[in-house]
Length: 70
Image 1: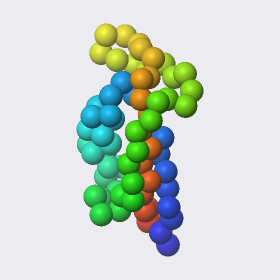
Image 2: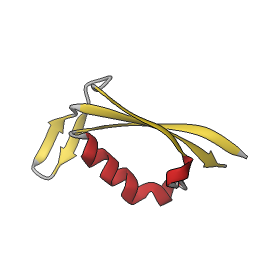
Image 3: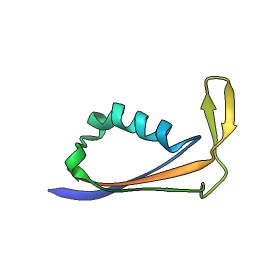
């Protein structure tokens, strides 16, 4: 049965978040045709994320809605 799922991912840039999601999409069982929508917005809460240079505050949050086989 397919379920509608949602990921909210904080980060430093939309491109950075989407690149990582695309690299790891197979872990979630997601193909491009399963994605319903992608939205970017300011972070909904203060989140500290790891960066190559230490830590930083998230400046954007990306929401990905997709169909998943479960």
